[in-house]
Structure formats: C-alpha cells, structure tokens
Image 1 (cartoon, rainbow, N blue to C red):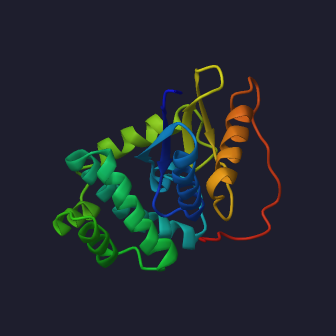
Image 2 (cartoon, one colour; image 1 turned 90 degrees about the horizontal axis):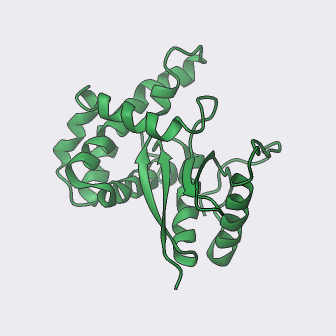
Length: 207
C-alpha cells in the first residue's frame, strides 16, 4: 500500500483562483495518496510598497483582516480547523459574494464552532509577525513575482518541489482531478522547468 504524503498549499482567502485550486486539491486528496494541509499567505503583505491601482490598494487594505483571523485560528486550534475556516470564508466570499467585513468573519467563525470574538484579530497587529512568517515560508521557494496559490509537494523523486498554480477553472472532479495532479507534479518536478502559460479567456467558475 502506497504511503500517503503531505501536500501544502498557501492561500489568501481573497483570491478566487486559489479558492478553485484548493477545491481541486480536496478532490485530489480523495483519488491520490496525498493529505492536503493549508497555510496562510497574504496578498496584502506581498503587495506592500508596490504601485497599485487605487481599487486594488483598497482591496489590499481590507485583505489584512481575513488573514489575521486565519492565523489567530491556526495558532489557537491548529491546521485542521484552519482548513474548515478557509472553506467557510471562501464559500461566503466567492460564492455568497459577502463583503470583507466583520459580519463575514463572525459568520464564518460561528459556522465552524469557533468563538466569534476571534474576529477581533482582524483589527490587531498581534498576529502580523506570525502571518509574515507563514507567508515567507510559502513564498520563499517560489519567489515574489507570483501570488497564490502556492503548492509545496514531494516531487517524483521524493524531493520537495514548490510552484505557483495551477490556475484552473472550474476545478476538475474525481479522476480528472487526479490526472491533472499527476501532470502538474511531473512538470513541476522537472529540473529547470519554470513556466507554462496561455491567455486566460474566462473568469473563475465556482462549480
């Protein structure tokens, strides 16, 4: 029987493409011998000091709250609870189109059985050091010219590979998810391989 391996994904709850990738990975977990672990990165951290359009700057200001709450929950309750919170947040943000405010955070926390007072972390810098450390751990192997999703996984030879992506829509299901995983891992594990890309012709599909 094949030993299961850990696969780590770094997400920011704001990103619709990371959300779709995360749902794909949960499908992969059902058809391949992998266990998915979720970690927090921050687009707000990534884009600090960059010259951004005003609308995106406003989004990055709002983006601090959700990732701070995610770190607070991870520290208090562990990775499995963080994964549940990510599902609750993502469902509200991307499917429910809820605003990135306290109501969304309280709703997500309550859904997974957590103290809604954890939403206070959104307005506190208490967790920023841990947030930046989590962000750095995810981004260091792939660089800062990419965003999220970032995945770290054992490659075909057993050595860790790290990569941005895949950017997909909608998320493949069942064995189709497994076949995509096999291909992504093969490509990412090829020494010297850096990029495979084409023009994106449609927006996120959350089916």
